[in-house]
Length: 286
Image (cartoon, rainbow, N blue to C red; front, side, top):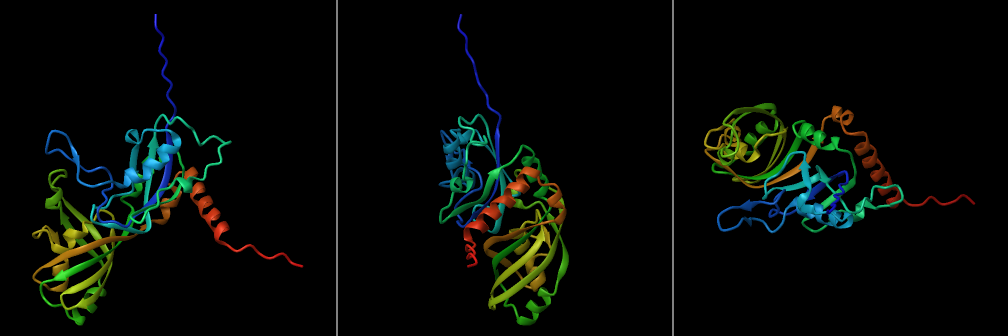
């Protein structure tokens, strides 16, 4: 007779934030099935960059890991500001660096390149995945975009638009995602908007809006499926978006009560550790 044993280890959960400075990185591997075997549309993805150095240290297979984030951005959209919260589940790691005798500098395992940066990486618990799903619909998102207007825009029009607050935006499911989402009407809030004229046809637009609002469609109108659109606000025949960045994610105050305790304590400790390193050492009194 032959005996075979299989040892499974509990999953390791990590929580952090990432910033993306490139317009050529997808959030997860983007595979296209148009040939004998799937091919990737992008050279790499946010999940790959974040997971590989961590999994190498833990002796885990990154392709078996789960990556979850509070919302997502398109490939051509940068994620700036305080970063997007994310969590990973790492099953069957060969090395459990969470044991007390391991003094792990998790920040040293965080990926940092000119195109992508992981911040505040630290251990969490399994509830972090639930929290991310819960929190993704409770962010106020701040966007910055470059907008082209077919008709020239005057300073008077910009002043009127900048005074707008708490405008309800009605969006029907965008045509570009109709293949994977139900055709429904969604009501979102544009909390504030600030337009800055670069020249009569080009504007820099900053806006704060509720989670889940499609900014590209808000700007160009999506063939009338988004009302009011940027063109409606400016009184222009047509507007289009040239570049888009997520400037920040603003969390609601009550989210603090929902964040798993381990995540909250670890994130605060990481901030304290950073402050201790950057703060000058006080001189001793003579």
